[in-house]
Structure formats: C-alpha cells, structure tokens
Image (cartoon, rainbow, N blue to C red):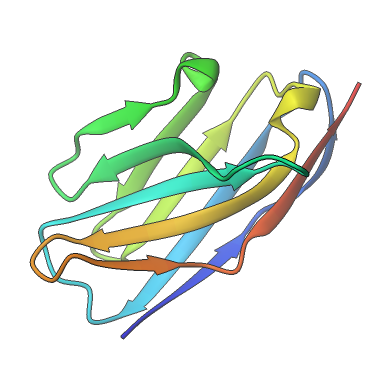
Length: 117
C-alpha cells in the first residue's frame, strides 16, 4: 500500500508562486511515475505534470514554461513549483503515483490552490 500526503496549497494573487509537495510512503517500487493532476469546480480531473523515476518530465500545454515538476527519489517526494499563476490555475491539486510493475495507481487527498485576479 502507498500513502500520499500533499502540502503547500493556498491562496495567491495572479502572477504569484506556490510550491506543492507530496510525500509518498509505503511500497513504492521502481520504475514508477509521480505526477500532479488538478480538478476545477465543474470540470474533469486533468493531468498537470508527470515525472518518471528516471527523470523524464511531461507537462500539459497550459502550464509549460510556468510550472516545474521535480522529485527526490531518496525521499519519495515529488514537487510542483508553480510560477506566474493565473486564475484559471485555481483547482484542487492531487498527487499521483503509478507503479509500473503492478499497474497500481495511488492518489493523495488533494490540496486547494486558489489564484485571485
């Protein structure tokens, strides 16, 4: 079993920055992919960014150049640095871990990010 605990959400004005963290504990086998998703009110959950255990990153187009995903494999922690935040980035952000060997998917409980104009 894997447990994920997110932190770092909050409220910020447009143009500001926030850094999200997600600490994973439990049976986290490599290779795996850690990532961030978000869900705005009335919308479906969408992928924001992912990073593999080998360090390969991917981003959804709307955050490219503004968000940076990183991870500390020794601490099983993934980060999301969010700069130049926009009101449309307002959402609940969820941490995710996908274990490739078992195809198991794990989710955190989410952290709220609110960007005001």
